[in-house]
Image 1: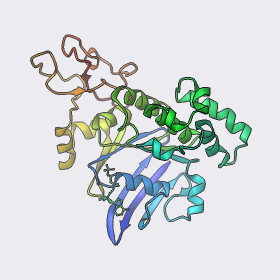
Image 2 (image 1 turned 180 degrees about the vertical axis):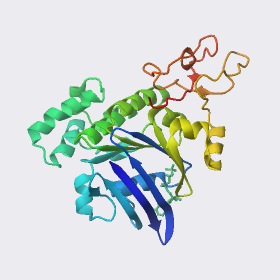
Image 3 (image 1 turned 135 degrees about the vertical axis):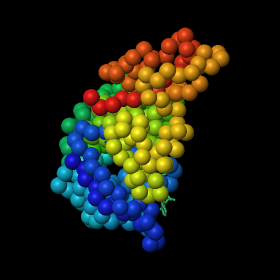
Image 4 (image 1 turned 180 degrees about the horizontal axis):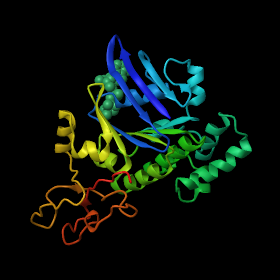
Amino acid sequence: MLSVEGLTVRADATDLVHDVSFAIAPGERVGLIGESGSGKSLTALSLMGLLPEGVTAAGRARLGERDLVGVPESRIKGLRGDELSMVFQEPMTALNPLMRIGAQVTEVMTLHGRSRQEARARSAELLERVRLPEPAQIARAYPHQLSGGQRQRVMLAIALANEPRLLICDEPTTALDVTVQKQMLELIAEVAPALLFITHDLAVVASVCERVLVMYGGRVVESGPIREVFTRPRHRYTQGLLAASKLTPRGTRLPVIEGGVPAAGRFPGGCVFRNRCPHATPECETPPALTGDGHAFACWHPAD
Ligand SMILES: Nc1ncnc2c1ncn2[C@@H]1O[C@H](COP(=O)(O)OP(=O)(O)OP(=O)(O)O)[C@@H](O)[C@H]1O
């Protein structure tokens, strides 16, 4: 559905992203990980046609039959928020502070051709779909009256409004506290038609995605199913990333330190799919005898 071939992003004759290729199938959830500055955001922004001034993209990126790179702004504008949409880290900067939430959700639909009446009805449905409490009340509120987690749900509702084929999320939960983050991740995994999920958090990517791309220095240095990349990393950078992370393969028996907290493998908030993971074992839960502090083991969620 999405195919990216030889994508290069450049500023002042310097390649910031170099020869990146990958594909996403319908319904697939793909993680994009890598250290700060490795080119994750620029890769996503070039698909959205939202590169900053002075930064240009070359190569090929297609969503279905439509080209995303090297096309006039007018053409990409028609696709953005329609066929593909994006949720950013900080919803406060993406929402209009002077407009009520309901109007903002409605607007993205009327801009893409729906009637006002249809858009209004659908906007109520969307706010409910992203599990906002009291959706009618939320629709009348202004962004500053909502919590960070609620604002992020509104952004998700806006992103889903025109039933995009691909959802791109760039660190969507980094600014949220752990419990809210977990709920948001579950929701994204549930509602995304197909997903490109950018994060630096390996535990998050292992929970939400089926496949992962690892970027380093502007290149994709490794890619494959989560289980394969995380259990047999081939690139030195991925090996280092995993060694420094708190992830532990599912079922690993962790050493217990004094006080009953596992010495390694802690994943604050617990496994995000804890309640509906087909691979759940008692080890995925928080064994009270072991932790007693609300932390659980991280675990893999290989695609079934
Ligand atoms: N407008 C710009 N002009 C020039 N260089 C830029 C511009 N925006 C980003 N860069 C550079 O491009 C590289 C990749 O940036 P990018 O934002 O894609 O990284 P990232 O992997 O998303 O990092 P982070 O995880 O910190 O968001 C970095 O070296 C950054 O300094």
